[in-house]
Length: 298
Image 1: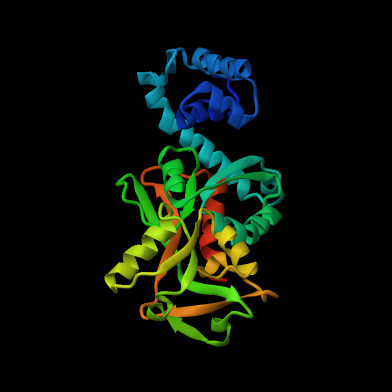
Image 2: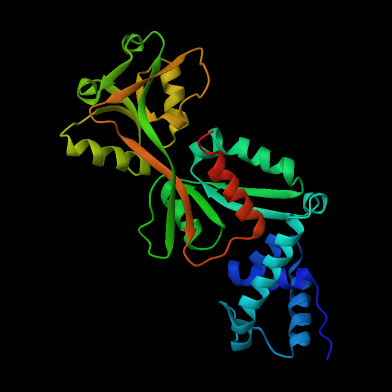
């Protein structure tokens, strides 16, 4: 018996599994739902068995579908890995790398790595979900993205966290601010000074408050915002100084804002890669992940 199917049929099968339904899988593959259904029907005819059990609420694999899943994943991975390794053929490879990323890393660091990857594989596109730390973890856990860049380790046993870099908290102020003339300042010296900070619900604020409480230091927050970029805007207007991670501050010489080290203690957040423990990245995502890790410290 001869079995006929296309690579997109196999991709459709895996997309439905990973995304939990036909509608999301069709959007991901940029095809209509009827076209997706026809591809799955073709696969089911080729293998002589039903692959999905469909109901109004959910889509689940049949016993045959569960047996077929690891084989199909391996076939796709081996094919894509071979294509990516073939120089000019790899440059013509199409695909989408889905990742989640905290906004500061997405804005200040990720672009240069995406640009370098795009030079090698210009037809591979990116979908970057820029979310807060908790939302980033949730996107990875739900399988909505292949991996994430986050500022905290994963408490979920099904997730792993690979540290990439430490990002210290610094003071950002205008060049005409009284603290602009000092090289560094201690946390104790900031007590009683009106500061601009992020809201208590953010991962950055939780990390900062936890570390300061161990040193019995309480800061006075004049204004709290949801986004680090907003705090910088308020600093520029002269409202006050802000405490925020160094990665969230201007990386080049800024005409208005300067940053100062804060000591006693030095408080840092660790940024790293969050992944599902037993999931295999697509070849394109794996190559991008490797490039990301190699370039983080550049």
